[in-house]
Length: 264
Ligand SMILES: C[S@@+](CC[C@H](N)C(=O)[O-])C[C@H]1O[C@@H](n2cnc3c(N)ncnc32)[C@H](O)[C@@H]1O
Image (cartoon, rainbow, N blue to C red):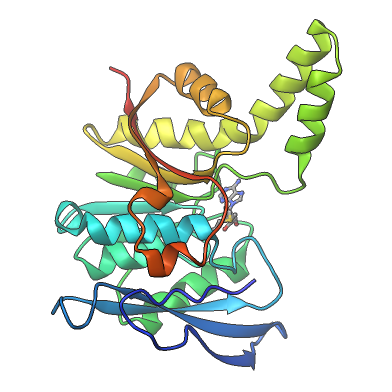
C-alpha cells in the first residue's frame, strides 16, 4: 500500500525508492499540513517506509488521521510533552514536534529496525525527537522517567493475524461458557497496551490518551478495557468528520478518534 497524502499541495507523495541497509526497498512519502497559500505555518513531513508491508515501517491510515488532528489542534500541542506509543513511522509524533511539542517516539523494544527508522525520520525532518524502546505491559526503568501531557497512539488497537474474524465467528457459534473464554482471549491482546496507557495517565496527572483505530467490532472492546483500567472516553469522533477531502479520498474504513482520560 502507498500513502499519497497531499492535502493543500498537489505534488506527488511518493518520491523515491532505494535499497536500504537491511536490504528492504524503501520509499519516501510526503505529507502536507495546511495550505501553503493560506497558512504561513504550513509544512511537509517526509517519511521513509518499507515497500514490504510491515506493521512498524508503513504509514497506516489511522496515523494520517491522527496526524491531521494534531495539526488542527496545534495550539494545544505547543510546548507540551508528548509520547507516541507504537509510533512506527511516527507521522503524528513528528507533526506534534513540528508544532512545538517535546516529543518522545516509542515502539516495541524488540524492533530495532523500527526504532532506527524513527531516528532516521526525525533527523530527516530536522526534528529533535527522543526515541525510546517501550513495549506495552513491560516496566523498564525508562517508562518511569516520562511524564507526557498527551499520549498518542495510531492503530495500536490492531490485530496482527485477522484473529478478530475468527473470534467473532466462534463467538456467534458457541455456547455461553465458550463465548466468555473467547472474549477473554481477545481482550488479553489489548490488555498490555491499556496497562501502559493507564500507567502513563496516572504518572502525569491531567494527561490524555488520543488514539485512532479501525472500529471493526463496535466499541464493546474499548469500553470493557476502559472500565477495567478505570478510564473514560471524553471525546469520540468519526475520523472522516475533520479530514480535508483531499486526504479523506485516499482513505477507507471506519476510523474513529477517541480521547481517553483517567476516570477519577
Ligand atoms: C499497525 S502498526 C501502527 C504504526 C503507526 N502507529 C501507524 O499508524 O502508522 C502497530 C505498531 O505497534 C507496534 N507494537 C506492536 N506491539 C507492540 C508492543 N507490544 N509494544 C510496543 N509497540 C508495539 C508495532 O511495532 C507497530 O509499529
